[in-house]
Every structure is written in structure tokens, then in C-alpha cells.
Length: 205
Length: 167
Image 1 (spheres, chains in turn orange, red):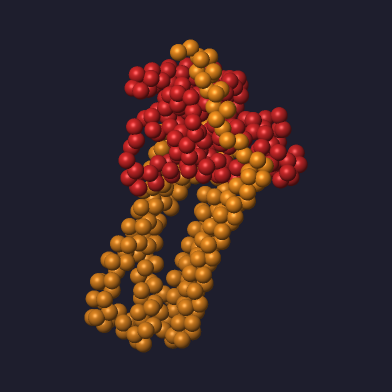
Image 2 (cartoon, rainbow over the protein chains, first blue to last red):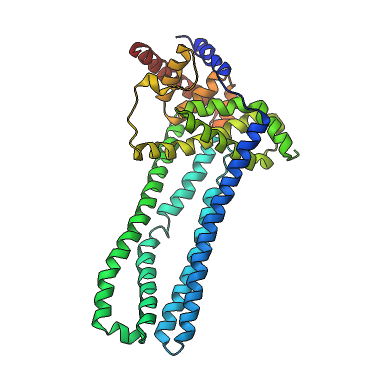
């Protein structure tokens, strides 16, 4: 088949396209914008509600346990990590959403690969391995110590509490790691896909 | 440039063929194409204020459409994989919703077998874009465009022959 024959065949696609009116295009834009804003509001609201709820809980329990110094340190650490996680989580999400498509394919691939590489293989990419058990254990301890009506040290010296922690920790950690790893695995596949495309684009000559 | 929605819709209406064709090349089923079309419109609207040169509207629309489609291809293929949709034979993959002449169906089947980069190169070639325009949209040198087009065309012709023999 000759080159211009391919182009001739392709031209017939114009008659097959179902052109949309301006109103239809406007409706598509409005509904997509609404969907995106709603998604943003849901994620933002849930994150803030969880974080604020946790902070209220930490404040109330800390005020009721002002004499338990170790318990206070536990709660303050948890509060600080929760706030930092909320801010960095929302910032990362904003960056992902703010992906700019109005550049040449090669530049867009470079920007996307750099962003994903920093996130998935950068200096802090493995932080979640330490952060998940750390946060999980601090949260479980905060709740458990408060409802046991004993001091932090006393609870840690109680055999049942320690056994309870040993049994509960692996279950919670397994679920948390499972979710985190799945997200990471998907994004790593995505990164490989983009790197592969970029490689093909650069190896043309 | 002014950033009024009315002007944006006017541009979109005039150039919507590009959006449809890019979606057609990257997505086999109608539902995915409609979703992609909506996503492209949204991304165009988001980047509309940064459009500086009114003379390069076509290139801007191609770039946004191609980049958006490539970023969605992986997502859609993942959903298809997870839903374990059985793979359909070649002929039934293509444009089941609209009647299309046989040559065009075969050509599309051949295009679907190309990788994502070659799909964009071939689309721009079939749209009779100049090497300079293709270089601007893809972000490679003009001489490189020639090499890539020749390679992609060879693969396309081979795929086209195979589709033709397999019908």
C-alpha cells in the first residue's frame, strides 16, 4: 500500500466522527469540572476530618492525663506526625492533580518520570516502612492506655496489654502495608511504562 | 489572549476533530473514548490560560490530547486487566458502535498494534502535519521525525498486511 493511500483511507474518518455542539462540549466540561472538584472536596474533607478528629482526641486525652509524662510525649509525637502527614499528603495529591499536559510529549514524559521517580525511589520513598508501624503503635498505645485507666508505664508492664499488642499489631500492620504496597506497585508499573516510552522516543535516531 | 469560556468553546468546537481522532487511535471502545474526550476537554480548559501563541492552537490541542491519552491508557488497561475482560478477535475490537468502511477498520486495527509513541507519530503523519509541527508536538528534532515516521510506517504497513490477510 502506498503512503498517500494510507492518508486517503484515514481521511474517511472525518465523515465517521460524531461532531458535538458547543452546548454538548460545554456540558462535558462542566460535568468533568464538577467531578474533579467533588473528588477534591471528598479527599480533602476526609483527610481533614480524620486529622482534626485525631487532634481533638489527643488534646482531650492529654488534658485528662496531664500527670502522665510518657503518655503526653506519645500523644504530642502522634499529633505532630499526623499534621505533617496531612500537609505532605495533600501537597503530593495537589502535585499529581496539577499535571500539565500542554507541552511536547517528550518534555511531558520527562516531567512525569522525574516526579514519579522522586516520589517512588527518592530519599524519602521508603519512609512509609518506618512510619506505618510507628504511627500504628503510637495510636494503639494512646487509645489502649487511656481506656485502661492506668499510667503509660503501668500498661506496658501489664502482661495482657503486651500480649494484646503483640497479637493486634501484626494484623493492623499487615492491612496497612498491603494497601501501601499495592499503591506503590501500581505507581512503579506506571513509572516503568513512562520510562519505556521515553526510552523509545529517545532511541529513534 | 483573552481567556473567556465562550472563546474556548469556539476553539474547541472548531478543533474537536483532533480530540475525536486522538481518542480513536488510543482507545478501542466507545466508553473509554468518551471518557478520554471529556478528560482532554478538561485538561485543555486547565491549560488554556497558558496558551500564548494563537497561531499554534492546533499543536497545543494535539499535545494536550496525546499526553492526556497516554496517561489514561495505562489506567484503562489496568481496569480491563482487573475486570478480566476476555480478549476479542481483531475485527470485533474496532469501532463496533459506528459503521466504518472496511479499509479504515483495517487501518485502525493496524494502528492499535503500534506502541503509544508510534501511534502519535502515525496519527500526525496521517493528518498530514509537517515535520516541524510533528517535532513541536512530540518534542524531538525534525530529522528524528523523518526516521521515526519511516519506521512507524513500515510497522504500520506490515500490521495492515497482516490484518488484511487475517480477515
